[in-house]
Image (tube, rainbow, N blue to C red; front, side, top):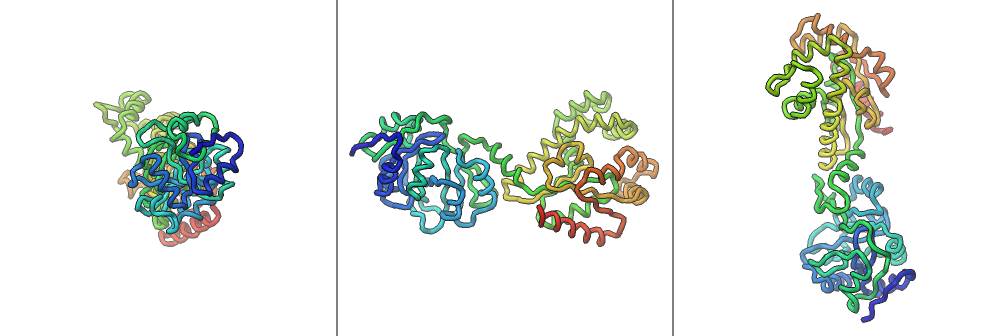
Length: 402
């Protein structure tokens, strides 16, 4: 068999594909060995030429995001989000295959990986063929993945129909594989895109609502209503206290900022509280130290939630605005209450005196701050049921218009 070396005429390559032949194609990662992914004979030849074990499934190259609905069932919204972010590019997205995809492609399974390669010649070929291309790397199994057309010829000259010379591949690593066919989502292979890049991208697609307000405003009811809607709720104050027990780096930073408040690696929280609640400047210093640590912890939990298939989350933080976390939210909700109401709530909740509650409130921002900086304000002076109903109505409005 003569193996054509093509540089311009993609129609010739498309014709070879339509006739059931194999064509090596360039991508941004490595060269692939492509055949009609709907033709069992072509797929079988890929396995034979490569010496690839039949238990290893093949991915399908597609021209764009619209192919997801053509070849896959139950396409999650996260798949479209990742395709918009990384396609064309080195990401293969695994989903449940439609029943007309040859079982040989699936290696007896139920899922198929889709990938849109970032190379103009291969994208042109995909458009001309109007077929999904089964295309593992163009090397014998176990050999080095080829990064040039000559390397492919060294492997398969006389054994395949054509090689498209698209120049050397820029990345030289296979695509990253993510399985979105079940929850939690899983990275099956880390390739050209890192795991954290994928996790961060999924987290950025979360619908995120910020809840803020001073002590005693009664944010807990609002957060419970969000949990009832399926949201992950992150309490930044609770996260901060958790970090005080687990993050040695944070403790060291607090020791540097507030000498004498840390002994034997343990923070004296009352000593720190007496310092920062009596001085706005010291409270500002505390916030400057802690915001970075809390934000890092929030981001990790959001990424974990996104990988579990979550789509809605809420952040509860007194310093939501100043910490910068509000920038991640589609809406911020400030919960306010009259001063006397808040004092009584704090006294009952924390078992402290009225004077101590007043000191705490006076150290925090006034309601006018939240009215100026939040998208919405919820007043919480009524009974719990009335306030819960107000929360449900507002969150419904936010989600419907988000």
